[in-house]
Image 1 (tube, helix red, strand yellow):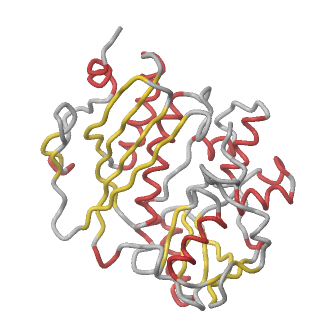
Image 2 (cartoon, rainbow, N blue to C red):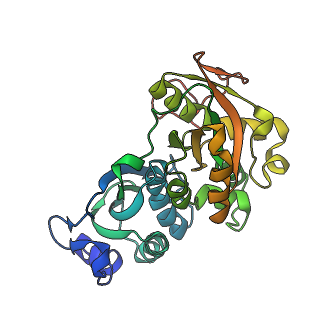
Length: 321
């Protein structure tokens, strides 16, 4: 049986990286040695993906590899950071070379597509889970945070909502074709890194939608000390969502389904046209769904009856495959 060092060498040791990758020492030593560029702040985030909690254990390994990295990169997008490096820790019950090869292919493909260098990690025995730490760079004056929203500003989202929840619902019904737009959004989400860069200097607050629109909007409102009014009819719904779930369930999926990994932002109305032009240049729409106000809470929807994901507490889990 292959050792963890054999598996790392075979599946998770990238080829020689170019000097511009900023990696003085990568996979194979006790620590990576990295070289951030002058004038940049380091943005760091970590996410853990657990089988049968965040993704189906039976999902294609290539999609699992893509997804594990994508959900972490989404956090870099939310702060307007440019991705640079990542670490990956994988636990699995027994080494499965075919599964690992497919998993690594999906992980490395997204690394290559986004310019992210894998610089270290760990492989160990245990239940199937993947922890990914991502590191990026952002000029300090351009970093997007959750705390900058002000009354009178617009609330907007990139792309479309509800696709993650819709894809999960289809998987639970037996759909396995990853070419289906909803299943693709659930198992192969696309981190909005280009959108985060485009919204620098325009958005006043930002967050990625991982736990559901309402739950994540609440984080922004709490950090900024403001409230909001939403217009449910303005929610941009993912392709095929109404056909798959019906009108009411599609709206609930957009409000609380999570796993969309779009960006939720606030911005002054005077910046909206510029923001839309910049996002159009990277192939994304920006939809206004409400307005920031001074009154606490979220008006326009019954937020008390539609909640997002929590790992602990009384809320009903939404990600159980």
